[in-house]
Image 1 (spheres, each protein chain N blue to C red):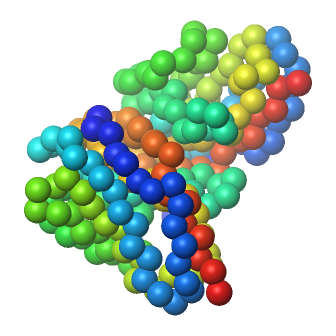
Image 2 (cartoon, rainbow over the protein chains, first blue to last red):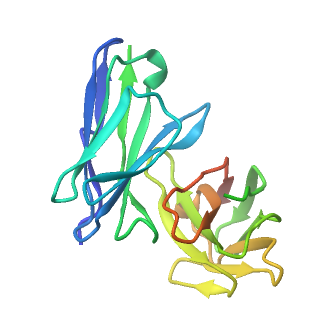
Length: 112
Length: 110
C-alpha cells in the first residue's frame, strides 16, 4: 500500500506571498492532520480534517488554512508568508483520526 | 494531554537492546501511550502504542508499569538505522491530536 505523499517536497517563497501544500493520504484513510516543525518550537499541530470537515485546530493564526476533498486528499494554505513560517510541514493520515497516524515525508518551506 | 518526560539523549551499541524510558506520572485512565520516532529530516514513524498491557510488534516492545506512570520502549537489537529522535506521547483515547515533546535522541554506534 502506498504511503502518505506530499508535494512539493521543497519550496522557496518570498515574504508576503502565499503557498499551497498538498497531501495524499494512504488509501482508505479519511483523516488528515497537518503539523509544523521548526527547530525552536518542535512539532506543532495545525489542524485535522475528517470527511471534508475541519475537526480540530491548533493554535495558529488565521493565515494558516486547509481543506479536504471528497477523495480525502488535503491541501493547506499559508497566506502573507512571514520569515517565521519557514519550516517542515508534515501531514499524517489515519483511518479515523483516533488510531495511529502515518506521516508523509514533509514539505520543506523556506521563506526569504 | 498529560505531559511526558524523556531523557534528551541516549547511546546504544549496535546489536544491543535499546531501552528508552518515559515518565508520564499524570496520565489518566483513558490515555494511551504512543511512541513515534523521527529519523533526521524525515516524517515521524509510528512504532507502537498501548493502554495498560505490555505490547510487542515487529519493531519494538512497550512495557508500561502497573501504575501506568512510566513506560519503556525496547528495541531488542538496535542497528545503526535506529538512530533517531524517539517521542513518547500520551494521547486521550478518541482524540486525534498528537502532542510532541522534545523526545530522546538515540545514537546507535558500531
